[in-house]
Image (cartoon, rainbow over all chains, first blue to last red; front, side):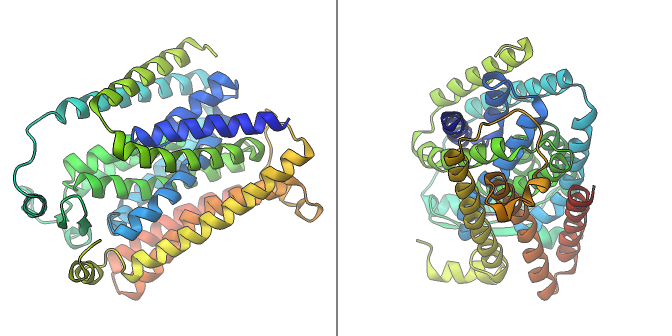
Length: 294
Length: 127
């Protein structure tokens, strides 16, 4: 039925649009859309969502790689454990009861809503001082300040710099606390493999707050990483016969198109009010999933 | 637009415009175009053939064998495969470049990621 495929593409477009606008990636909305609206079993929804996450990650990374904002060296280090976690998550998803997956997914949605509330309330703190280039210099200095722990042998690999058009200057930084980043990577990978989301909601705060990467670098690096992570677990779903091409293909194309439009709109329309709309939406969907309504 | 001097600095530092970033960008761009074309073609064929979405599990690998007969599912499966292999190819490209630049630790990390991904791919293909 042609209208079914087109409707699915439309729903994936909306999910990719809102997910990208909220800075969460499409997966967080695709899985509920497929389970609540189309009544697909969770594993098929997760597999299709993982393919969409790969698509939105590759598409989003094209811009970040050109701008040099992704830290490829750091991404490869963190991906060693993230891919292991993702494959573990993919394997675990095959034997966990469907209800457990739904409860876990709802829990991650509540956690995501909570992190968005924290970000929105923190965003109202004192605005940065000085001209844009001065802010770039301050940002670089703050990021390059030595951490309190002893220098790591990996330090040179965790350094990065990029041109920030908003600050009109080069932002240099030095990542640290690699162990914390690796620990978060395992968790992020497992969550991605189990639930079909990118895991950026875990990786970005850890890279930004704990590892000391500027938010733009953390977001760009996470965008690059989630594609590799999702591909790792998608192969497991592929092997187990959960990746239905007639379901995944329209979801991928719709979500990638939606994410591209969503990120363009989101850059202009980001506001605290919008954040609260997403928080309420996430909480509402999580409750619907827990209640098993569709 | 970035200042040319700053861009040169970024290239020296191995950031934007460096062979590492350019190489991965090229791989991602090619992978995205190829998979989008195959998925698009498969979807058009599905719409023309009046295919339903279906809720049954499908082994995409089994569908690949139907490629010569123009089966929409085969094109969709090939498109999905191209898409999933794009990040893997990106990691491979990055690892080769890092090895060429004699960045041993980073190349080793890339190799480890590739080894894990290869295990997953083999599991999917060989079972």
